Length: 239
Image (cartoon, rainbow, N blue to C red; front, top):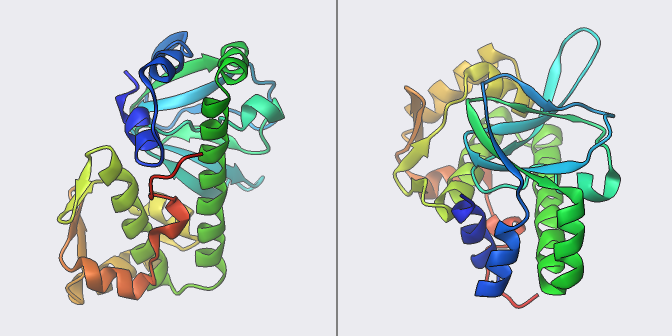
């Protein structure tokens, strides 16, 4: 059930069999959720955190006029709102972008595992730190990168994150997002995203069609994005 999460942890540090069993004990329920459903609402009291098993989730904030800004995408194996364990409520909402399968971890179980296994507590903390690093890269994209570099960087990031769990390689990956979804991630209009995707294709870098990102020139795509995967902390290191 949580194999993707274990792959992500083990890409960064060792996890013992005992710790694996402790992680598996966290979850009380698995749910299937349709696309476009809010699973955590901003401000609501939280008693569990969500692990994404399959599909795509996003964190978002919106305005009264209905406009939405997506602040992070979550892929299989992500603990989407682990920080809700300490905050008890979020200042943003979490929703499904595709049909998703999620596992619920009651906060009392997280507390017990973190107390009994200090090393796992540090790994939980690490994952929230990586989420924060992803947020900072997205802020940089929104504030300083061109539209071309923003979309290129998003594709580079997703390729790295999906590759950890065997869902991407150098040739590309499946991505069930619309151009509107990408626009809400990158602070662009859907029309601007369409033009940007066309330019990336015409430059021979990447093609996004039929819900698949086909990478034509990975090195070139990284150059356009100025992509450095260091913020994803993919070097194994004792914590």
